[in-house]
Image 1 (cartoon, one colour):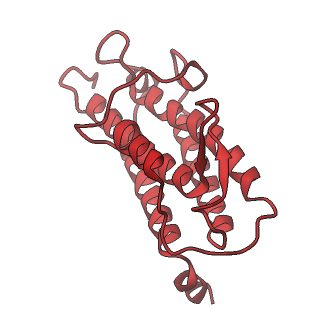
Image 2 (tube, rainbow, N blue to C red):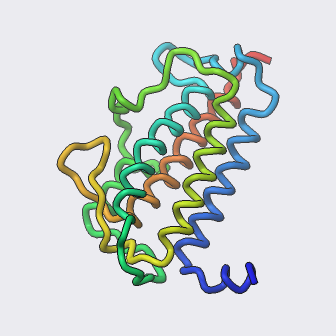
Length: 191
């Protein structure tokens, strides 16, 4: 029965759940076996450590998941097969979120900046947050995620569709997991 339910799920929900699971694997690989010193090592002053990349993702995801969950409450069922961000959502994802040479590097707003030192439990927190995100995707897959909107918790006055918000979460994770991999692969990384 579960396999039958999965085939009825919209393509966007299957894709995002799969990509979040891939991000879980990347996070496990990048944080595997690190000591507290290694988790907090920064390649240069002001740059983030592996742990800070993960904590930033945890804080950001927590900030996004709450308003998305609230926006979905009591919405009628009207599923859509694909997420179709509007022009602003596409511009935001392509210019600031997606890992790409053309995306802009901006400083994280203060409310989602990681602490100077991060605890080893940050990986479990990240994985738990992604589990919550996948659960939210299951709740959202029967809804029209291209029309239900939520207020962006980081940029006052901006609203995104739920679909765009979920896509932002996944793309943002990939961006900072790549950053964490570069830190761990650095020639000066402590072994």
